[in-house]
Amino acid sequence: MSVAAPPADRPSAGPLWPVLAVVAGIAAFSVMDATMKAAALAVGVGTALLLRNLFATALSIPVWLAAGRPVPSRAVFILHVQRAAITTVMAALFFHGLVRIPLAEGLAISFFAPILALYFAALLLGETIRPNAILAALLGLAGMLVIAADRFGKGAYGPEAVEGTIAIVMSAGFYALNLVLQRKQATLASPAEITLFQNMTVAAILLACAPFYWTTPDAVSIGWTIAGAMLATIALLFLSWGYARAEAQVLVPIEYTGFGWATLMGWLMFDEAVGIGVVAGAALIVLGCWIGTRKQ
Image 1 (cartoon, helix red, strand yellow):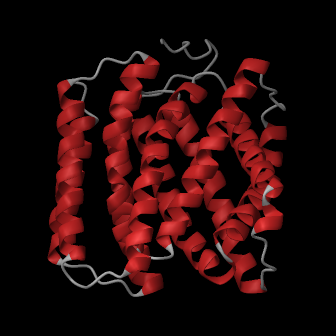
Image 2 (cartoon, one colour; image 1 turned 90 degrees about the vertical axis):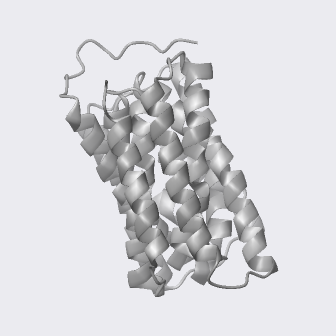
């Protein structure tokens, strides 16, 4: 299945700008993960996600209005709903796991998602997978394995940690599909439209299930979810802009940079130590990102 070309009036961008936009988006999402872990520990995953998406919807409305109130066609609206449904399951599984294991470790486990996304991009978007994209993904995977070995070798893990690990592995499968739909979505809709309808649709799905999980939040947890909403909105704008201007296989390896941010936030907020294995794995990930963003 081929992807429709970006609209003719969409501004062009140099080859580096989409990469930088996605780096910024991943950084915002990684810091958001830390704020949402803090909120989920306080009020539960469902309540934290619902509050975040409600706040994010409110923040997205002015951006949408300033962009001229773009309204999706029926076909694009269906795509928005499809990605929102996948995102809801992905996020619920991810944060269910993240409250049970360290932040950086959870993100490291999820890093096989970009590997799957390369093949989803070929299957669903008709992209040709270049050898350097495969090498980049393999280097990123090697870095993830080094990091995971370092962290798993430092302590015993009980049933809670095993449950968290399984949840994050399942989440990664949904995340791979989400990455590819993100590329398709970005070629058919503006960042402002994607940001509003993504947040609004996820909030609607979570609101329908609220009677099963709702916990009344306190002021601190509300503050964490507001911060998460702001970061998620910024991330969606950056990622939508970047993915509209470069192939998924070029941008997917950049997902690995999120580990550096997760390691930093885990250390600052949750007192998670960083070992030599983390540094070695991060070096492999950075090398993979550099190779993956090269055309030749």
